[in-house]
Amino acid sequence: ATDTITFTFTEAPIGFELGDISLTNASGSTITNLTPTNSILVYNATFTAGANSSVVDIKVLANQFSDAAGNMNILSNTLSIDVDTVPPTIVSITRAGSSTLNITNNTDIITFTLDENTSDFVLGDITAVGGTLSNFAGSGKVYTATFTADANRSTDGTVSIAAGVFSDAAGNFNIDTKSLTIPIDTLSPTVSLSRATPSAILKQNATETIIFTFTEVPVGFTIANISLTNA
Image (cartoon, rainbow, N blue to C red; front, side, top):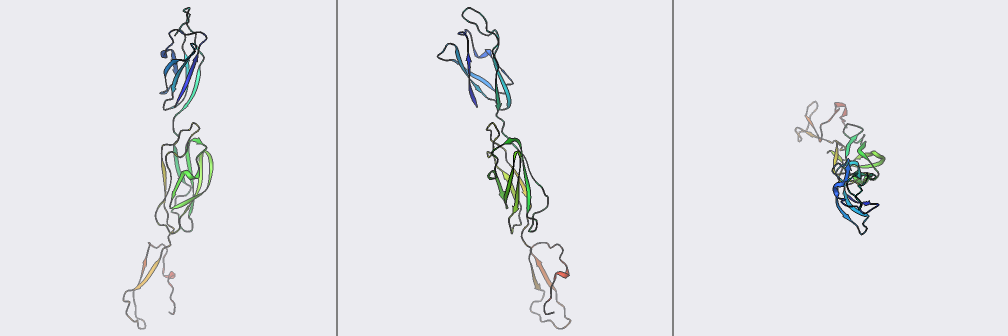
């Protein structure tokens, strides 16, 4: 970013040049294009902000130029410019929980932490895959939202923030991205039964092997889960 700096003199300066101007805490900031205006008492120069955050002080040093009588100048006042060209960043995206979201427990609180205060970070800046976000709240550097997993899903979901979606007080937009992976299994397991000898007619006390085939590895499956009708 640039700005025009105006130097106003009490008398027409003789020998005033770019090297007479001092920048303190420049952090890469520069001043260029020193030119006189239509008035012999006014000069302009271009200030270009560096890629950093600092308060840059600009002043004209003493004994750098003279008036027509040969008197040298005294030190000028100091002009301070607040420079912030550092983009905000996403510190973290975290979950309140750690387990896989399932049919019974299908929600989690997601926390978004930024490194600078922002006033334009909104729910629409966040992308959710495998679920939806709601109850967005927060301010400054920390925000939260509720993630609700989609039904009938057995693959991971993600919550992510893209680049260029929020800014800091100086108008710098984030250039980084970050995402969080959330394990999800909201798909009900199923089981199918089959016989080892499907065409056989069993006589009294004869035995047969019944095969139980699951869509997922069963947890807690026991003989008590099996029902016999017309036994």
